[in-house]
Image 1 (cartoon, rainbow, N blue to C red):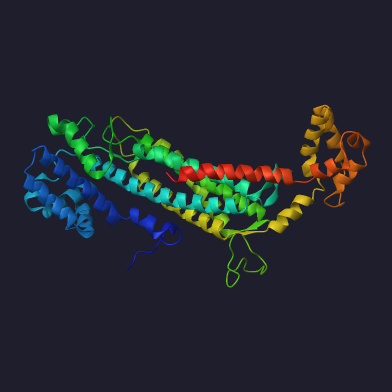
Image 2: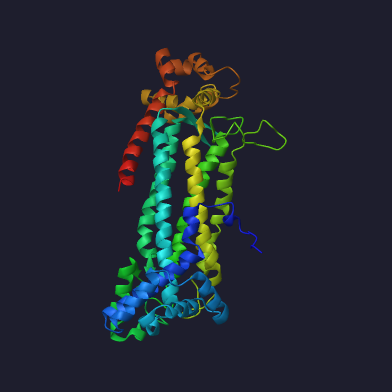
Length: 454
């Protein structure tokens, strides 16, 4: 009878590319690569015959060890690494007696984990960079698309949609830089025995460990216990949560701008067949954006467990082991899923520039009070007096149209004393703000593209 799928990652979330990193088959192959690298390092130091290393490497390269055999042996031994050691010994010919010589289980497990997270970080970097590139294209396209900026959910001053996007883009680019900084601390391994001293390899301990990591493309853990430092994994977990939070912030903006009352932006919707509601046929819900926000809530919970795993009894206990089988596979798969979905939103969203213009105008011109206040201050009115004048002038703005505040200003001698009608007309135009936002968007894009090109 086939096993029933239970975890949504098995059937609902994540790409094949991310899931494949964490399959049991791939985990076995990584562990065997570590065993082969150990054999080669031992042979280089003349601690085992060279033909022994050659046969162990051949057994690994030719995939003689099967997952089925390892699982059968684990059922007997109730020890995952001993099952791998036994299975590899069975098919290593002249190397049989030398498999795993001098190593402890976590030399294999944690070094294989380093390989796993190196692959995961490369995948996430690619997905994140692709999202940044898509977002940069949209920011460039809409650098002059005028809209109202909002603070506290209220109209503030004009900006552009492109400049709004550069804020998210800049943050995501910083996450790329953070990942590049983390990888040398994350992609580590150890080959130093039961409590990390390397004594089991005698005087060759440091050389063997360095050689193994060189063969695998990993960094040597400088002062391990029986395990590599869990601060490294905790840092990665926090990075995953930070990226998820940025994606949540971006998709929350999409959700808000898609509100019926705002209507400035909407995520892709397949009009030919997609359904928004089982009863309300008119619905076009931002379900992908909501999905990303929902997954972000889960991913943000993972760092708490990774912090707990930094604490162990003496040189090692098993309190971290079981939860780590979930923690990083789920974090990586879900974040990659979120990155891909966010890119699909960005590349396919509908920008309603006309609605942005309409919404910019509905405040009757009050979004330009800052501009008028600053000009009055430049003309000689005290800044505080100018602020109070504009504050009182905006009271009771109704449905008088986009120029309602301008008309009030033209009729108020306190302003016309300082400003001509032409100046007022110019000051109530959002163009200066739009131009400033567009120019800054271009500067940010120039900087970001230089960083993405690295």
